[in-house]
Image (cartoon, rainbow, N blue to C red; front, side):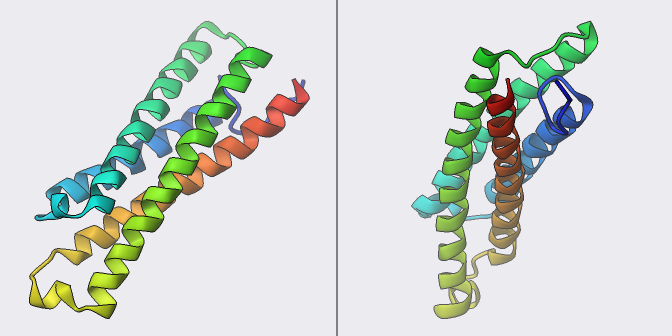
Length: 153
């Protein structure tokens, strides 16, 4: 079978997983550094979702490193179906968290002007949500690739 870009056990798959893990970590770090995030449920959900995404991506990145190190193919139907389900679940959670947090940020910064009157760090909130959307894009790309790999295995 021809190797697909981003497939498990390849260098591009490792880069994709490191990107997912890195952007999820950056999203969490920015949200935690912003004062008052814990008062808003959507932001807490974003941290929980990005935390799960970070753990999932880190685990698969470690598996990719292991596969590259011992030169083993990870494209068995059982493993790929596990990757597909995991990627779909984390992609759905990441999109929901990013969208709900983006809605709160837009509401507070544009509609209610809470950023000015309540001294909220909306810039950090916005950057954290941006990183969450980048994370979602990478995981959506990964889940799409895994689906096609599963169809061909």
